[in-house]
Image 1 (cartoon, helix red, strand yellow):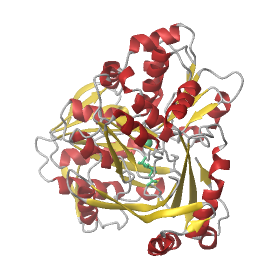
Image 2: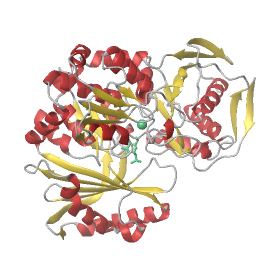
Image 3: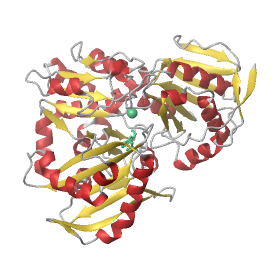
Image 4: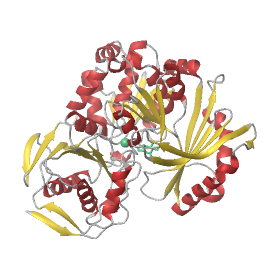
Amino acid sequence: MIQTIQTKPYTDQKMGTAGLRRKSKVVMQEHYIENFMQAIFDVIGNLKGKTYVLGGDGRFYNDIAIQKIIKMAAANGVTKLVIGQNGFLSTPASSNIILKNHLDGGFVLSASHNPGGENGDFGIKYANQSGGQCPSSVSDAIYQRTLTIKEFKICDTPDVDLSKLGHQELCGMEIEVIDPVTDYVDMMENIFDFAAIKKLFANGFTMCFDAMNAVTGPYAKRIFEDILGARQGSVVNATPLPDFGGLHPDPNLLYAKELVDLMFSDKSPNFGAANDGDGDRNMILGHKFFVTPSDSLAILTDNFDLIPAYKNGIFGVAKSAATSTAVSRVAKAHNIGYYEVPTGWKYFVNLMDSKRITFCGEESFGTGSSHIREKDGIWAVLFWLNIIAATGKSVEEITREHWKKYGRSYYMRFDFEGIDTVVADRLMADLENKLPHLNGKDYGSYHITEAAPFIYHDPVDNSDTKNGLIIKFADGSRIVYRLSGTGSSGATLRVYLEKYETANLSEDPLKILNDLLQIAMEIAEVSQRTGKQQADVIT
Ligand code: G1P
Ligand code: ZN
C-alpha cells in the first residue's frame, strides 16, 4: 500500500521567520506539500521509533494537508502521530504536547496571524524535540533537500477519521487522536493562581476575549468561562472557521477592531484581550487603554513574584532586537540575565534550554516563558489576570505605575508592505553600506552614537546571525530596520522606533516619535525608493 511517486522540485520552499508560509493557491499546487514534507522526513532520517504531534489552526486546506501528512508519515516509517481532534491544535498546545510526552517534534499547520481562505495564506511549522521550531541549520538542510527531491512516499489509504478520540492504525503507524485543550489547561492551572482569578470574576470583574474565529476559541471558552467563571459570552468569535469569518486574525489595534472599539467605548468591560490564528500572539487592553507588547513584557517580568510558578525566582529575560528596551531596565533592577536576539521565537529556545532565561517577548504581540518553547497568547492573558487579581489594580494603573518607576519607552512599528523584493533588498543593502558614515552625525537634536547591523552571537551553539540594521542615538532613542520573513508575496520593510522618556509619560506616541519617523524615512530614502509617503500598517 506504500506508493513511491515521482515529483519535480519547487524552488521556493525555504522557511522564513516562522516555518514555510505561502499563498494557499501556491501550497495547493500538485505535490507542493508532499515535496516539502518528504524533504523534512529525508533530513530527519531514520523515523522508526519516532513520534510527532500534528494539528493546525483549522484554516482553509488544514483538512486536506493533514491527511496528506498522515499518509506520508506512515509511508516514511514514523512510529506514531499524536493528532488534535478534528485536526485542531494551537501552536502553544502543540509545543506543550512535545515537551510533556518527550516527543521527537511536530507539525503545526498554520500561517499564524495571516488571513486564511483560498485567497489567503497557508503554512507549516516544523518543531523538533526541543518543542520549538527547528534551528536555521536544519531548515537550511531541508531547503537544500527540496531543491533536489525526485520522489515522495505516501500510503494509498482512505482518509483518517479525526473526529474520533483514541487510537487507530494506518499502514502500520499508530495514531492517537487527543482532545487539543485538556493538557494545555492542566499546564495553565499549574502556573497561575486560578483560585485568585476565580475570585476576581466572582466579584464582578468583566473581560472580553476575541478569538478572531481562530483556534483559541475552544481553549478560551474552557479556561475563562467554564473554569474561571467569566460570564458566558466573554469569549467572542469563538468558533474556528476556515476563513476566520473574513477576519485578519492578527491581534493588533488595526485588525482586532471590534475588540478595540469595545474597549475604547464607555461601556467596555474591565479587561480586553485577543489572540492570533494559531494562539501564540496576544494583545492586552484595559478600559480605554492599550498596552504595547514591549511594555507588557517589561510589566510581566517586573511582577514575576505574583505568579505561583515563578515566585521563587526567574533566570533572566530576552527580547528580539526590534522590541523596545523597556524590559532591559527591569532586568537590571532585578539583577537577572538579559539578552537581545534576532526576530523569530526559535532564537529564544537555546536560552531557555540552558536556563539563561525564563521570560521572553517580541514587539509583534508575542510573549512567553520557558513553560514551552513557543510564545503563548493565553498564558500572557492569564498572567495579566493574575496580576490584576493579586494587586486589585486596573490595566491602566499597573502600566502607569510601571512607567513612573522605570520611565516610558515610547514605541511604534511602521510597516511598508508589498514592496518589490529587488527594491527592498537594494534599500537594505545600500543602507547597510551607509551606516558607517552615519556615526557621530546630527539630525536636529538627535545625535547618532552607533549605526550598525544587528549581529547575534548565540552563547549556546556559537552561531552568528545577522538580522536588521540599528541606529542608536545619544538620548537612548533607536531606529531599527528589517525586512519581514513571514510574508507570502513581495517584501515588507519594518521600521521600529523607540524614544525613552522619564518625565512626559502621557503623550501621544505618534507625537513623541514623529521627528524620529522623519529621520528614519530620510536616512533610508523610503519614499524615493518605494514611492510610499507613509506606512501601510502602524502598530
Ligand atoms: C513576524 C514578527 C516576528 C514573529 C514572526 C512570527 O516576523 O515580526 O516578531 O516572530 O512574525 O510570528 P517578520 O514578518 O517580521 O519576519
Ligand atoms: Zn501565530
